[in-house]
Amino acid sequence: MTAPGGSSPLLRGRATGRAPVGPVLTAPWVAVEWAGPLFRPALGAGGDIAGFVGAAVRGPVGRPQRLAAAAEFDALFGPPPPGGRLTHAVHGFFGNGGRTCWVVRTARDSRSATATTTDGPRIRFTARSPGRWADGLTVTLRPTGGPRFTLSLAAADGRTEVWRDQTVGTLPERFGAEASSAVTVSALVSAEVLEGADRPPVAFRVTLGGGDDGTVTTAGLVAGAGLFDDIEEIGLVALPDLVDPDPDAVADAQAALTAACEARGDRIALLHHPDPDADVDAVTAWRDRFHSPFAALHWPWLRIPDPARSGEVIAVPPCGHVAGVIARCDLAVGPWKPPANEIVAGVVGLTVPVDDDRHGRVNAASVNAIRAMPGRGIRVMGDRTTSREARWRYLHARRLVSAVERALAAEAAWLVFEPDAEALRTDLDRLIRQYLDDLWRAGGLAGATAAEAYEVTIDPAGADEGRLVATIGLRPPAPAEFVVIRIDLAGADTRTGGDGGDRGRDR
Image 1: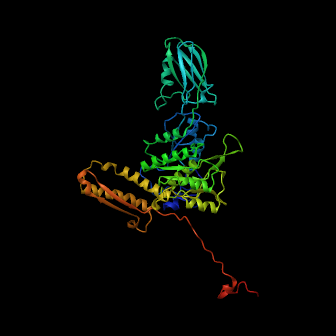
Image 2: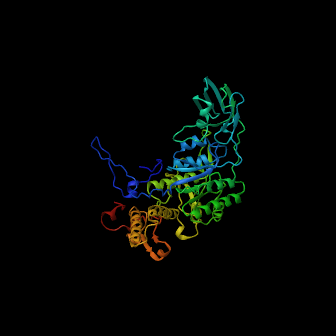
Image 3: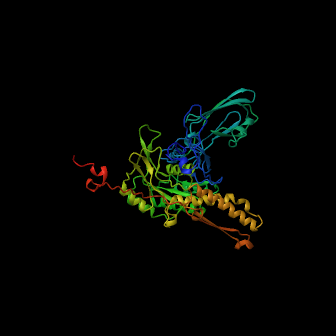
């Protein structure tokens, strides 16, 4: 009974109040199957969807790509480049329960490898994406009779393609535009016929070269995050490769990311300290640079197995794994579930050990600690934003309100341009109350009664200006951050009465 990804002991049936549903039985026994969440956000709420920007060895530059699995990322962007952290963040996201993310590759001054034929039709082949990954890629043409030929491609990373029964006229179709549902095109190269399209094909073999990976800059990472502005479904944003030798440049970039999330009002920036070995004093000082309910700082960095070297470990920022934990909680329970006291999958250690004293100090500074809990694995043990306001102290409260805003905006979209009459106000009131009542009954709002959990007021004062205003009050559930269990062990001299009073006496 785990959340998506199989790494979190979330009891979904218990959390949602849904009655267990049993499968069809073939033998006498009792079977229990945990059902999905009772409360399902409106379509398009999307708070569990993350956006990542960083370095990759290949793949489109500056164009957001929607992915539904780590394997899709690997197929498109390849293995991690030396020192790159984007791959590990995306794998950490999916490994911890995330289902969908957007990725932008950034690479300033990058260049695609090319090669041009000299015999027969003059054709220029260009790697599908910039980088040195295509240096050494070979294109071989073998005539098969008349104008037809077979084109074979072999990349240095082991990928190959064979295109049979081609002509010069089919090259624009198979080696031109990006792949679509109607036409399958080469994933390795594009081809442009420069001259001699009427010439018969001549056998040749050319090797691509001149590719350049470019550089990842702090400004480029921030600009890459800006490409998410038109993608409404993203609720979390992280820049795992934001590690600059100049800490002030990193702070400025994180401040810009946080400001962009706050301007939208529906995204959380997942921040990290740029130094993997930052101690308590350093991370609390770093936290003081940011004051927003739309950002959360997690610490310390994580140690994960190095996919390139068996038996070795590497340090990565926690943002990708934390984004997966948040998504897991959203999908298993809802946005009101604090993404804390949650196990972090795929992690073998931390760069800085966290004990009770360090945990207490960073928690008081609204830094979310990740620590190894004896017998319970490595867990996220914080649920705070970087806000100074008490009402926005908790991350789950901010995300719950954002989810409500998204859902109600989607649910009420049909009301625009409807006649502003009493019936319209009644419809809007009923729509909002129904949504909030479902949310409250699922445990997303605190209060013994609906009246304690939420309130809705429809203000018709702006009717003359074409404005219909609904004022909503919510009571998000508060987390039990500090749980104290007092145990009093009574001594033998305090026992009185009956057999219990005689136990322990000499006989």
